Length: 293
Image 1 (cartoon, rainbow, N blue to C red):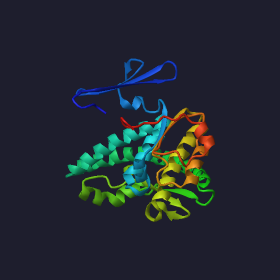
Image 2: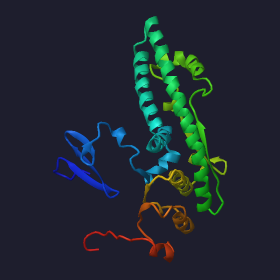
Image 3: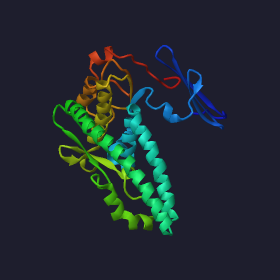
Image 4: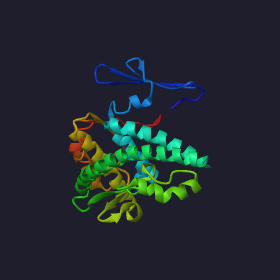
Protein backbone atom coordinates (compact mmCIF):
# COMPACT_ATOMS: atom_id res chain seq x y z
CA UNK A 1 0.00 0.00 0.00
CA UNK A 2 3.03 2.29 -0.06
CA UNK A 3 2.75 4.57 -3.10
CA UNK A 4 5.47 4.66 -5.73
CA UNK A 5 8.38 6.94 -4.83
CA UNK A 6 7.21 7.13 -1.20
CA UNK A 7 8.93 5.69 1.87
CA UNK A 8 6.03 5.15 4.25
CA UNK A 9 2.28 4.78 4.67
CA UNK A 10 -0.07 6.00 7.37
CA UNK A 11 -3.65 4.82 7.97
CA UNK A 12 -6.11 6.07 10.57
CA UNK A 13 -9.42 4.49 11.56
CA UNK A 14 -12.09 5.58 14.04
CA UNK A 15 -13.72 2.74 15.98
CA UNK A 16 -16.61 3.83 18.18
CA UNK A 17 -16.78 7.54 19.05
CA UNK A 18 -13.57 7.78 21.06
CA UNK A 19 -11.19 5.10 19.74
CA UNK A 20 -8.58 6.00 17.13
CA UNK A 21 -6.31 3.33 15.66
CA UNK A 22 -3.32 4.33 13.53
CA UNK A 23 -0.90 2.17 11.58
CA UNK A 24 2.35 3.38 10.06
CA UNK A 25 4.81 1.36 8.00
CA UNK A 26 8.24 2.71 7.11
CA UNK A 27 11.85 1.64 6.79
CA UNK A 28 11.94 1.61 10.60
CA UNK A 29 9.18 -1.02 10.74
CA UNK A 30 5.50 -1.13 11.63
CA UNK A 31 3.85 0.82 14.44
CA UNK A 32 0.28 0.40 15.67
CA UNK A 33 -1.17 2.89 18.12
CA UNK A 34 -4.46 3.16 19.95
CA UNK A 35 -5.36 6.69 21.00
CA UNK A 36 -1.72 7.69 20.62
CA UNK A 37 -0.31 4.84 22.72
CA UNK A 38 1.89 2.38 20.82
CA UNK A 39 1.38 -1.33 21.40
CA UNK A 40 4.47 -3.08 22.73
CA UNK A 41 3.43 -6.24 20.87
CA UNK A 42 1.02 -6.84 18.00
CA UNK A 43 -0.72 -9.53 20.09
CA UNK A 44 -2.02 -6.75 22.35
CA UNK A 45 -4.17 -5.49 19.48
CA UNK A 46 -5.55 -8.87 18.40
CA UNK A 47 -9.16 -9.17 19.50
CA UNK A 48 -9.71 -5.44 19.97
CA UNK A 49 -12.28 -5.48 17.18
CA UNK A 50 -13.53 -8.59 15.40
CA UNK A 51 -13.32 -8.68 11.60
CA UNK A 52 -14.62 -11.46 9.38
CA UNK A 53 -13.32 -11.15 5.82
CA UNK A 54 -13.96 -13.26 2.73
CA UNK A 55 -11.80 -12.89 -0.39
CA UNK A 56 -11.38 -15.02 -3.54
CA UNK A 57 -8.14 -16.36 -2.03
CA UNK A 58 -10.20 -17.99 0.72
CA UNK A 59 -10.93 -20.83 -1.68
CA UNK A 60 -7.55 -22.08 -0.44
CA UNK A 61 -9.22 -22.62 2.91
CA UNK A 62 -11.01 -25.54 1.26
CA UNK A 63 -8.67 -26.76 -1.48
CA UNK A 64 -5.34 -25.47 -0.18
CA UNK A 65 -2.85 -27.14 2.13
CA UNK A 66 -3.27 -27.79 5.89
CA UNK A 67 -1.35 -24.63 6.80
CA UNK A 68 -4.24 -22.52 5.43
CA UNK A 69 -6.72 -24.23 7.74
CA UNK A 70 -4.42 -24.03 10.75
CA UNK A 71 -4.04 -20.31 10.13
CA UNK A 72 -7.83 -19.98 9.90
CA UNK A 73 -8.20 -21.61 13.33
CA UNK A 74 -5.41 -19.64 14.96
CA UNK A 75 -6.46 -16.21 13.66
CA UNK A 76 -10.15 -16.59 14.41
CA UNK A 77 -9.89 -18.25 17.82
CA UNK A 78 -7.29 -15.69 18.90
CA UNK A 79 -9.73 -12.87 18.11
CA UNK A 80 -11.96 -13.76 21.04
CA UNK A 81 -9.88 -16.06 23.28
CA UNK A 82 -6.77 -14.48 24.82
CA UNK A 83 -6.07 -17.74 26.67
CA UNK A 84 -5.70 -19.51 23.32
CA UNK A 85 -3.50 -16.73 21.93
CA UNK A 86 -1.21 -16.91 24.95
CA UNK A 87 -1.02 -20.71 24.66
CA UNK A 88 -0.24 -20.46 20.96
CA UNK A 89 2.59 -17.98 21.55
CA UNK A 90 4.02 -20.19 24.31
CA UNK A 91 3.73 -23.28 22.11
CA UNK A 92 5.65 -21.66 19.26
CA UNK A 93 8.42 -20.64 21.67
CA UNK A 94 8.72 -24.18 23.05
CA UNK A 95 8.54 -25.68 19.56
CA UNK A 96 11.43 -23.49 18.43
CA UNK A 97 13.49 -24.59 21.46
CA UNK A 98 12.67 -28.26 20.85
CA UNK A 99 13.65 -28.08 17.19
CA UNK A 100 16.95 -26.42 18.10
CA UNK A 101 17.68 -29.26 20.53
CA UNK A 102 16.84 -31.85 17.87
CA UNK A 103 19.25 -30.21 15.43
CA UNK A 104 22.11 -30.47 17.95
CA UNK A 105 21.18 -33.73 19.67
CA UNK A 106 24.30 -35.82 20.35
CA UNK A 107 24.40 -36.95 24.00
CA UNK A 108 22.31 -38.06 27.00
CA UNK A 109 22.35 -34.57 28.50
CA UNK A 110 20.53 -33.25 25.46
CA UNK A 111 18.04 -36.14 25.66
CA UNK A 112 17.18 -35.11 29.22
CA UNK A 113 16.62 -31.52 28.11
CA UNK A 114 14.55 -32.79 25.17
CA UNK A 115 12.31 -34.71 27.58
CA UNK A 116 11.78 -31.64 29.77
CA UNK A 117 10.96 -29.35 26.83
CA UNK A 118 8.71 -32.02 25.31
CA UNK A 119 6.71 -32.34 28.52
CA UNK A 120 6.18 -28.57 28.61
CA UNK A 121 5.24 -28.61 24.91
CA UNK A 122 2.68 -31.36 25.49
CA UNK A 123 1.03 -29.49 28.36
CA UNK A 124 0.48 -26.44 26.17
CA UNK A 125 -0.50 -28.61 23.18
CA UNK A 126 -3.39 -30.15 25.13
CA UNK A 127 -4.78 -26.68 25.82
CA UNK A 128 -4.61 -25.72 22.14
CA UNK A 129 -6.15 -29.00 20.96
CA UNK A 130 -9.01 -28.79 23.47
CA UNK A 131 -9.94 -25.26 22.42
CA UNK A 132 -9.67 -26.14 18.73
CA UNK A 133 -11.98 -29.14 19.18
CA UNK A 134 -14.63 -26.99 20.86
CA UNK A 135 -14.25 -24.24 18.24
CA UNK A 136 -14.59 -26.59 15.27
CA UNK A 137 -17.55 -28.42 16.81
CA UNK A 138 -19.43 -25.14 17.26
CA UNK A 139 -18.32 -23.75 13.90
CA UNK A 140 -19.50 -26.92 12.16
CA UNK A 141 -23.04 -26.32 13.42
CA UNK A 142 -23.13 -22.65 12.46
CA UNK A 143 -21.49 -23.17 9.05
CA UNK A 144 -23.88 -26.02 8.29
CA UNK A 145 -26.82 -23.73 9.01
CA UNK A 146 -25.39 -21.10 6.64
CA UNK A 147 -24.78 -23.57 3.81
CA UNK A 148 -28.18 -25.22 4.18
CA UNK A 149 -29.85 -21.82 3.93
CA UNK A 150 -27.70 -20.79 0.97
CA UNK A 151 -28.45 -24.04 -0.91
CA UNK A 152 -32.15 -24.29 0.00
CA UNK A 153 -31.41 -27.36 2.16
CA UNK A 154 -29.69 -29.19 -0.68
CA UNK A 155 -26.27 -29.33 1.00
CA UNK A 156 -25.06 -30.19 4.51
CA UNK A 157 -21.64 -29.28 5.86
CA UNK A 158 -19.52 -31.05 8.47
CA UNK A 159 -16.07 -30.21 9.84
CA UNK A 160 -13.79 -33.00 11.11
CA UNK A 161 -10.72 -32.15 13.19
CA UNK A 162 -7.56 -34.09 12.23
CA UNK A 163 -4.91 -33.97 14.97
CA UNK A 164 -1.43 -35.14 13.96
CA UNK A 165 -0.83 -37.11 17.16
CA UNK A 166 -2.61 -39.27 19.71
CA UNK A 167 -4.70 -36.67 21.55
CA UNK A 168 -5.33 -39.15 24.37
CA UNK A 169 -1.60 -39.63 24.95
CA UNK A 170 0.77 -37.19 23.26
CA UNK A 171 3.70 -38.56 25.27
CA UNK A 172 3.13 -41.89 23.54
CA UNK A 173 3.22 -40.06 20.21
CA UNK A 174 6.53 -38.50 21.27
CA UNK A 175 8.01 -41.91 22.08
CA UNK A 176 6.75 -43.40 18.81
CA UNK A 177 8.08 -40.49 16.71
CA UNK A 178 11.29 -39.85 18.63
CA UNK A 179 13.64 -41.63 16.21
CA UNK A 180 11.95 -39.97 13.25
CA UNK A 181 12.14 -36.54 14.93
CA UNK A 182 15.85 -37.04 15.57
CA UNK A 183 16.42 -38.14 11.98
CA UNK A 184 14.36 -35.24 10.61
CA UNK A 185 15.84 -32.77 13.14
CA UNK A 186 12.37 -31.27 13.63
CA UNK A 187 9.11 -31.94 15.51
CA UNK A 188 6.86 -34.01 13.24
CA UNK A 189 3.74 -34.04 15.43
CA UNK A 190 1.65 -31.63 17.49
CA UNK A 191 -0.81 -28.76 16.92
CA UNK A 192 1.51 -27.17 14.34
CA UNK A 193 0.78 -30.22 12.13
CA UNK A 194 -2.98 -30.46 12.81
CA UNK A 195 -5.71 -29.59 10.35
CA UNK A 196 -9.41 -30.07 9.63
CA UNK A 197 -11.38 -31.46 6.70
CA UNK A 198 -14.64 -29.98 5.37
CA UNK A 199 -17.29 -32.39 4.09
CA UNK A 200 -20.38 -31.45 2.10
CA UNK A 201 -23.02 -34.17 1.76
CA UNK A 202 -20.44 -36.57 3.23
CA UNK A 203 -17.88 -35.88 0.48
CA UNK A 204 -14.57 -34.11 1.01
CA UNK A 205 -15.39 -30.83 -0.69
CA UNK A 206 -11.77 -29.86 -1.32
CA UNK A 207 -11.33 -32.93 -3.53
CA UNK A 208 -14.76 -33.61 -4.99
CA UNK A 209 -16.52 -30.23 -4.99
CA UNK A 210 -16.98 -27.85 -7.89
CA UNK A 211 -15.51 -24.34 -7.76
CA UNK A 212 -18.92 -22.94 -6.82
CA UNK A 213 -19.43 -25.51 -4.06
CA UNK A 214 -15.98 -24.84 -2.67
CA UNK A 215 -16.68 -21.10 -2.67
CA UNK A 216 -20.02 -21.68 -0.92
CA UNK A 217 -18.38 -23.90 1.71
CA UNK A 218 -15.60 -21.38 2.33
CA UNK A 219 -18.11 -18.55 2.65
CA UNK A 220 -20.20 -20.66 5.03
CA UNK A 221 -17.18 -21.09 7.31
CA UNK A 222 -16.64 -17.34 7.42
CA UNK A 223 -20.31 -16.47 7.97
CA UNK A 224 -20.59 -19.29 10.48
CA UNK A 225 -17.77 -17.72 12.47
CA UNK A 226 -19.52 -14.33 12.30
CA UNK A 227 -22.60 -16.06 13.75
CA UNK A 228 -20.48 -17.48 16.58
CA UNK A 229 -19.35 -13.96 17.42
CA UNK A 230 -23.00 -12.85 17.31
CA UNK A 231 -23.83 -15.38 20.02
CA UNK A 232 -21.02 -13.94 22.14
CA UNK A 233 -22.54 -10.48 21.59
CA UNK A 234 -19.27 -9.19 20.13
CA UNK A 235 -19.24 -6.35 17.54
CA UNK A 236 -18.20 -7.49 14.08
CA UNK A 237 -17.16 -5.88 10.82
CA UNK A 238 -17.90 -8.13 7.82
CA UNK A 239 -15.95 -7.66 4.58
CA UNK A 240 -16.99 -9.70 1.51
CA UNK A 241 -14.72 -9.14 -1.48
CA UNK A 242 -15.99 -10.37 -4.88
CA UNK A 243 -18.30 -12.71 -2.99
CA UNK A 244 -20.83 -13.29 -5.80
CA UNK A 245 -18.38 -14.70 -8.33
CA UNK A 246 -19.28 -18.24 -9.47
CA UNK A 247 -22.48 -18.31 -7.36
CA UNK A 248 -25.88 -18.67 -9.02
CA UNK A 249 -28.54 -15.95 -8.63
CA UNK A 250 -30.34 -17.79 -5.82
CA UNK A 251 -27.22 -18.11 -3.68
CA UNK A 252 -26.24 -14.50 -4.33
CA UNK A 253 -29.56 -13.28 -2.93
CA UNK A 254 -29.53 -15.80 -0.08
CA UNK A 255 -26.24 -14.39 1.20
CA UNK A 256 -28.04 -11.27 2.47
CA UNK A 257 -30.38 -13.37 4.61
CA UNK A 258 -27.32 -14.93 6.28
CA UNK A 259 -25.81 -11.68 7.55
CA UNK A 260 -26.75 -9.86 10.73
CA UNK A 261 -27.78 -6.42 9.47
CA UNK A 262 -26.71 -4.83 12.76
CA UNK A 263 -23.07 -5.27 11.76
CA UNK A 264 -21.12 -2.94 9.54
CA UNK A 265 -20.86 -4.80 6.21
CA UNK A 266 -18.76 -4.04 3.14
CA UNK A 267 -19.37 -5.98 -0.09
CA UNK A 268 -17.50 -5.55 -3.37
CA UNK A 269 -18.84 -6.92 -6.66
CA UNK A 270 -18.60 -6.24 -10.38
CA UNK A 271 -22.39 -6.31 -10.86
CA UNK A 272 -25.61 -6.11 -8.84
CA UNK A 273 -27.91 -7.08 -11.72
CA UNK A 274 -28.82 -10.43 -10.14
CA UNK A 275 -29.86 -8.93 -6.77
CA UNK A 276 -33.53 -8.29 -6.08
CA UNK A 277 -34.88 -4.75 -5.67
CA UNK A 278 -35.44 -5.02 -1.92
CA UNK A 279 -31.78 -5.80 -1.30
CA UNK A 280 -30.65 -2.94 -3.54
CA UNK A 281 -32.91 -0.46 -1.71
CA UNK A 282 -31.47 -1.47 1.67
CA UNK A 283 -27.86 -1.01 0.58
CA UNK A 284 -25.72 2.04 0.05
CA UNK A 285 -24.19 1.63 -3.40
CA UNK A 286 -20.83 3.18 -4.25
CA UNK A 287 -19.86 2.84 -7.91
CA UNK A 288 -16.22 2.99 -8.94
CA UNK A 289 -15.18 3.62 -12.54
CA UNK A 290 -12.06 4.54 -14.46
CA UNK A 291 -11.64 8.11 -15.68
CA UNK A 292 -13.91 8.73 -18.64
CA UNK A 293 -16.20 5.74 -18.01
